Length: 380
Image 1 (cartoon, rainbow, N blue to C red):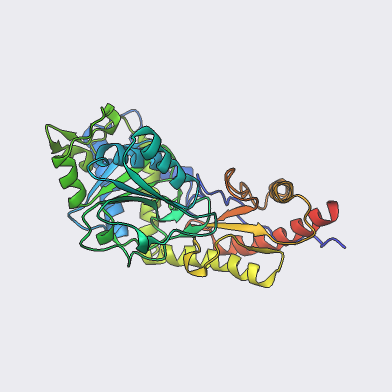
Image 2: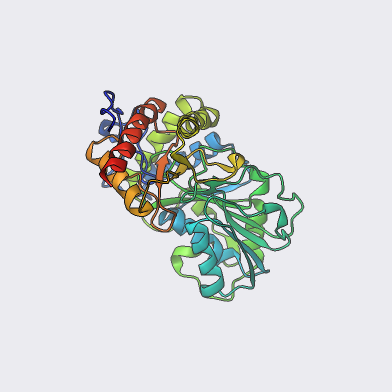
């Protein structure tokens, strides 16, 4: 017998993994101070960009001697910029346990053709980070957005490493505690944990990364949009808000709104707490229902932002079709939007639990998930 539809609906059904839900206090009126129709090089534009950098540093606790730049093309552009500008001086250790990490492997091995050792793990599992050679440059994702698997901590990364660590942290920044002393290059985007608009990325460089930029010139030509040095010296203006190309000042204002909200609720600790509470609600739901489980095998490496789930009921005849039907049914009821698994990932669901999501909305959505599951089982 099919369950009765739940009575309570989420106040906000947006659980997309990017662009992600806006902060709960967000409204269009909050963007009224955006300097639209003004040059980003005017004093007001420079001030807004510099404020975005300063607030990012403040909330994330990024060391004062690390550079923070706003760059084009979201996290993808930031990480591509880092690889093309910094790699090649020594061999690379390429690490992948989900689709975006696999994309970075392709760039290094097939496009840049750098000598590399490739370490991979299946979806739901993670590479042994202690087994890497940190005398080489190491490229990895901190949180696998499409697998729901994250690095538990940075303890195994040696402080005296000879190589650089390049970390794609786009679904980890603002929701997980990143060990800055273990990360030489860190990238992320605005549209993830803080719910900002897309198209812009953040590039964070340690002093060691800056030293590499100023002492090493890649063998390949660099397009203008990737160039971080001029005459062998870092272009410092990029890290003061003098962006390489024209940014959207509307998107900058939107990011500032999110940053100020994050600071107002208690900063990084509060943001992490919100993401943890969201993820915990789903983990508890999985523990109470034997037909669904976390894709991440080890609880210590389960993501608190991109929570990926798999259906485990033996009655399911076609896993991919079933998962799509459940996601479609929940979307039709307007209780959970955009929660299908990533196209390259195993069949299942992916529910975003970043800090802009309210735990009460997760808790209201989960009975609907149970209803959709039972309804689709009956419909097979």
